[in-house]
Length: 579
Image (tube, rainbow, N blue to C red; front, side, top):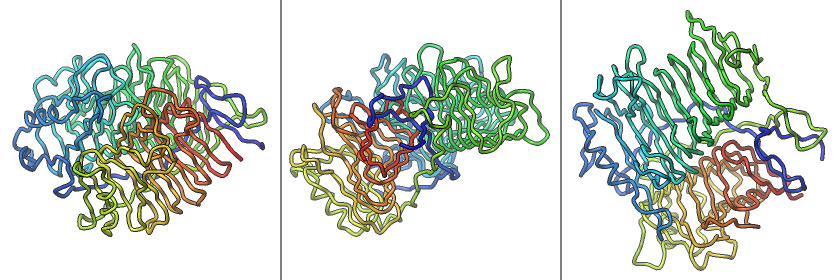
């Protein structure tokens, strides 16, 4: 077998001892700067443009939009249960560039005891051009001992059904004179993300309790990508002492000017790649030994003229570090009383627990696999978009989808609704993006049981093809047909997909690459589906962030020529290797 090794946290189930079935957890990520980009939606796409009729939000920062915004959230959050015949589809609440004045909390789901659903999707036009701003000295936000949330995705007790909660492409500004403000309380399960978001305090002293908070029970897994937090006592306040054992995967995190700590952890697990901090306070303070901290590629700078006596990380949990550049912290990792790691060289890795390996002769270190992020093609101009609508008067939507694909347009956008598919839909070479906009796709008779994929991607004119924001239907039993077959020689990006209808991907043995980001898959029922892998990789290399192959076994079937690099909720991932 040679000398291969996998570095795995010893608390995770590691290995089914009989080869060729193995349990594999490795770290992957990317190397680029934050990849925020603007996206504007033309009429007819089905998004709710808050500046258009009937909402008419003011985006000059003059008129208070709080009541309108809360009313829109109340009307938009799905009210059906997840097991309803058609489930639900989220609507995208879209904020064009501008400043939106808010004077009180905006609250999403408030149901308790695992009853609340997700489906709150808020998207701005651009990270720094769309600004939701809390009034200075706003009522109720003045007491740091009794914090109050500005944008609250879940004010209930606990839920593991908060699917498809999304916040993208905007800035949350808690204003000045609000020391009790929490910029964002976020809660999501299986598929959810905070992407290309800035959270800041405009106070000259950075007043505010926390930039982002995730403290409700059964929170996670979900994704953070391209997050910038300026000010606050804590940039991030994650977990609670009762029961919060899930995790968040983080790409491209930038922290500025926190006054107490960067990240406060309490029974929570974080995987962080590409972290930059400009602070003189601890970057991570871990309050409970059952947490976990994994950080790869980071630069920690104590600003010029400032000093600190603190270690960068204070923790008794498992800590894994690799390629850390430290400028100013006197120690890297400590407990409350002892220094565990005084210094670390760039490129070096360190772990404070025993290493496990798949083979006895393997070196006790990580695989050091190549680190890549998903490519980010620009959105095409609106004249190059084709919009697909549901056709309830027809037997299915196959003809409507094929007509859009045949239009010559490169971007195919789906209006909200249900799309029934009973035959293969081939993606032609000129198409670069399928934007599902969280519409529901349902595989029906004619494409149920014969193994063919709903969408087939072959040769493409583009280096990268994106398939995103697609939702499946909870069926009574697993559908053995996958969502996508990839036979492309380029890149395929699967992003923001909640596919609870069966397997998700099959690949042909080409030189193409697959990038999986914020993707969940499930058989369709709550019964394990044996001999029905969620992913089959034949020769293509794959990189994954925040992916959750659930109840489909083996989760991944891979030929010896294919490689998977992943981070996120895959600690029980069964990989079957075939030679």
